[in-house]
Length: 273
Ligand SMILES: NC(=O)c1ccc[n+]([C@@H]2O[C@H](COP(=O)([O-])OP(=O)(O)OC[C@H]3O[C@@H](n4cnc5c(N)ncnc54)[C@H](OP(=O)(O)O)[C@@H]3O)[C@@H](O)[C@H]2O)c1
Image (cartoon, rainbow, N blue to C red; front, side):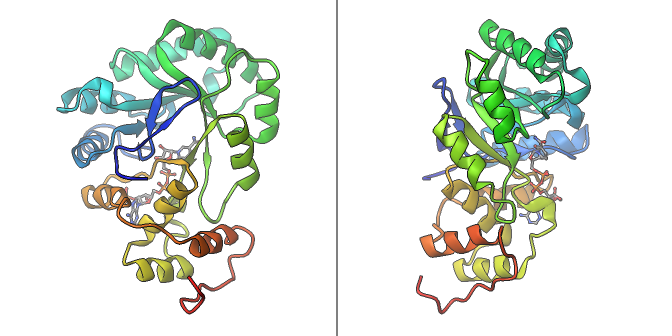
């Protein structure tokens, strides 16, 4: 993982930057626009939004206003739960694409699996074939949902976006996705802030002279997972991108992996590392 521009190749050949900015709860208007502006200035080239976040318009505006060419920014948006169904999904995509105003979307995801997800997926296939979205995928799909989809689709979803951090290390799902050439994308990589100040994360961060957030982001990257931390703060947006100049050792990766099973273990710097 060399630098902020490093990309993963999706199963259709489209490249996605490993690091992106999430904009859930970035307030519509100036806050969301500034977050995207600062991220692009910092070197981020991936933005993750959704119809549900209410800031697609601001994401599009900030991307258009930036000096970075549209083609160099990877923009994801998502189909919301109330818009499931074949016709509804086609219409919802058109609304999102229009709100973004970027001609096309790079990745369109089913936000959550709902009852009529198969009809929605048919709509996504059509959107993909039309070229209006360069890739399509899913979010919050378990192995069962993926197996069901794979059994009846000519196209393998490019991405599955799920919650993924050391306290929710979805190892089986990660391995399943890898085996089927589906790129896992980690949301809430900073645990939404809830476990950011965990004592073990703090000890490890001190050991590497990095922040707790940087340790969590680096952990996801070293699992070969695309990661989309959210921040609306310029300093923290920069901090979250400063993760390409160090490497977590194998032993420390194994320790972090184990936090999912037992968060009462204690990191000890005297262990052989
Ligand atoms: N597909 C889905 O169902 C789904 C669900 C949830 C999230 N997501 C996506 O994933 C993105 C990230 O997940 P998330 O927003 O749930 O949570 P997150 O990225 O785990 O955490 C965001 C929180 O951490 C704070 N933060 C950011 N950087 C920090 C740092 N360096 N030090 C201390 N605090 C920091 C942020 O506050 P400040 O803004 O004040 O910095 C915010 O409160 C979302 O924005 C969204 O794009 C997708």
